[in-house]
Length: 246
Image (cartoon, rainbow, N blue to C red; front, side):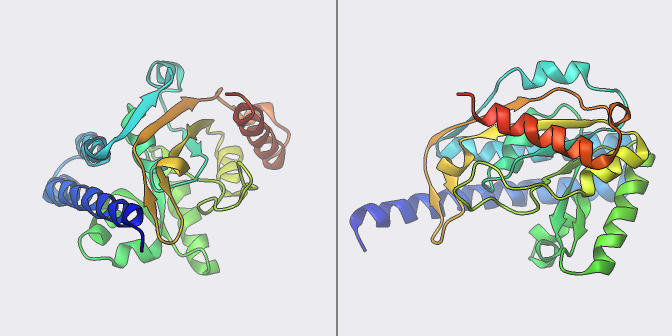
């Protein structure tokens, strides 16, 4: 193994150690908020704990720049929204939550809920789903429907999994757009750039200092489209067009 790779691995392990320490610090706070506080206050605490946890990446050279994303949220509907985001890296979630001004519950793989400590955090702040199980997907859709109907917002990565291809974006799964169309809840796209460079989902994983940027797109009102596939196609085209710009 070359010395360069040795230093890369040391950097990676130190970085994730800091990330793990931040997780341990927020763990009891999120747990208490989840079980003891009213939903509105609990969600406020969860959001800021996630921001603190995400900000741990600053300590090892990954910076986040929000290109008007925070100000753009002033024009978002006051009620529930479905936030969709492209997915190239584990850094996409930290980038997204550092810019958000409201708590939105993300979907997560069921396997993540089985990890020590982190698994409990996932259960408290996400909607877990086992993608290979039709029964689990149906339950997740019902849970998402209920959560949105009660005023909550969701974060969904419509590509379904981390993009490890040479293409800038993968085809979208239809779930988020069906929910939006069926419930009349707006879609808000967020574009994350450069996360793959800073933390590549390769084997072995590579962590590099760099700048990750976020920017929001227009609000897509489902009432303006004839069906959910038309809505899905228009959101996908926005991503394709935006990714061609510098």
